[in-house]
Image (cartoon, rainbow, N blue to C red; front, side):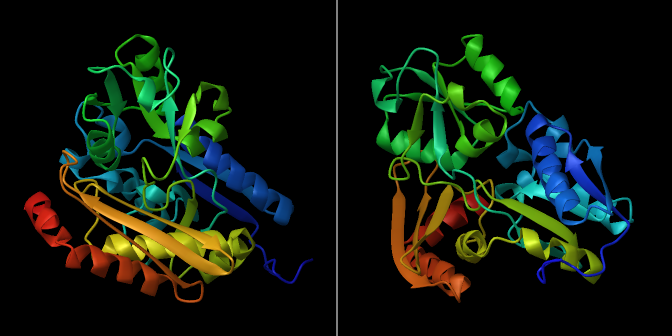
Length: 315
């Protein structure tokens, strides 16, 4: 057995997951990785419907943010129904409740946003007045800044629901995370990958976060081989920036770090929802202290006046 694999695997592990197709894909991916590492361990999935999955007629920013996708799973960890939970890391609040840890951060899939349309090749090809659907204030603010002639409308639901609404003609195009489409085998629906210059990704986009109780050192040890160091460095920097800015679904902000020649290169922005005000910052930092880089980006944004936007949105 590899020295990086826990020498004392548990006989049984239960993974808590939302029941959407993408969430189940993610949970099944981690289940299969764990089964390969620990063939003697029985690994199963506890599917759950969260409050965020149930309320689909109101934007997330108005009902408490993406933490609504996480709370019920944490309750299952707390009461012992599950041992770990698998999340899209961009859905995980920047500050975890006391007693919980991110035990592993999985290797990142494509972190970019994807342009999906049945009639148009890319954002630049959309005629004036075209309706574009997105659930994200981050995407909306950047679209309004770069393409003010487009009409941005809210879009909720799982990936399949959003694609159906596009196919029914409710939108000329929709913007989704490329990672979700690729994981679900829907790469063919992507007309264009949107560059990070046009749409800076969300904090943690494309990465999986595996959460468990802080006191479950046995589970933490078993999850260690799933941890991807470069991805973790990037998303820890991004999350540190967002945390310093009190980032949430109510705040249009993005943060994206990449490993380049042994260093972290990170960009961040804060904007007003209409895209008229936008502060940007970028910097380099060491992989060994990613959170310092994220904090530095946040400080640069605040120095440019981002605090005024944040104060008006957090009200």
